[in-house]
Every structure is written in structure tokens, then in C-alpha cells.
Length: 141
Image (cartoon, rainbow, N blue to C red; front, side):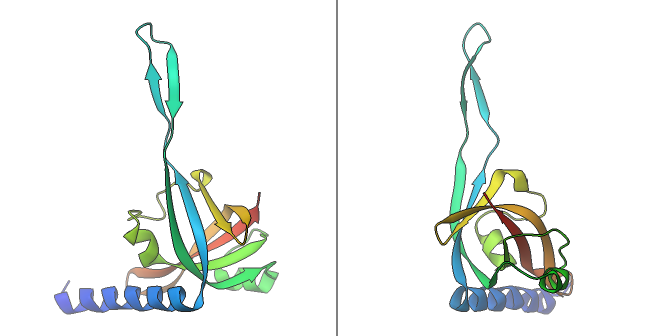
């Protein structure tokens, strides 16, 4: 891979991130880590601690109660309450270098005073082998 191609991919990721940040709605992402079990000297569980990574990213477009056509266009099959497109670069910048590997069961999204869980996710707009958007179908909890 040449340096010029990598620069073009990085530029595409930054362009999408700038667009989503400028025109999008802010959403707060909460990603819980695995629990850390602490035991006493007898081997009994003393405490269970988890930490949470919290960061804010943009979402554009941001669609409440998406139609089946909108879901199909986004590559999603499950019905959901909110459909958002997020810039892949936002995830990468916050330490989630492989957004497809993290456990969606440990992730929630907060926006407009409501909390959502991820029902389904897909990717959109590939530039070469780089995915520019992560599309999330969210269900209110």
C-alpha cells in the first residue's frame, strides 16, 4: 500500500467526521468494560468493579421511528426506535479501533434525555477497504 492511498483514506475518514460533527446531533456513548472480580484471602468474591468509557460523538442523519425503507437502505433488518449514522473515525479516536469487535450488549447510547441499546449495526460508504460510517439501529430502554 502506498502512502498516497493511505493519506486519501485518512482524508476521507476526517471529511466524514467533520460532516457528521457539523450537521449532526450529539450522542453520548457509554461502553462498559468487563467486570473485575476481587477476592478475599479465602477465595470469596469481595467486590465486582466495572468501568465505563463515556464519550460524545455526532450522529447524522438522525431518524426517529425509521421506516422499513430507511432501515433497508441502512442495511438493517430489525425494527428500531432510532436510526443514526456515526463517523467511523469518532469510534477510532476514542480507542475503539475495531468497532465490530466490541460487545454491543455492553454499550448504550444517550440522546435527547433518552437511553438506547444497540439493536443492530451495519457499515456504509466504503472507501477502498475503509468503512466511513457505522450505522446503528437503536431501541429505547
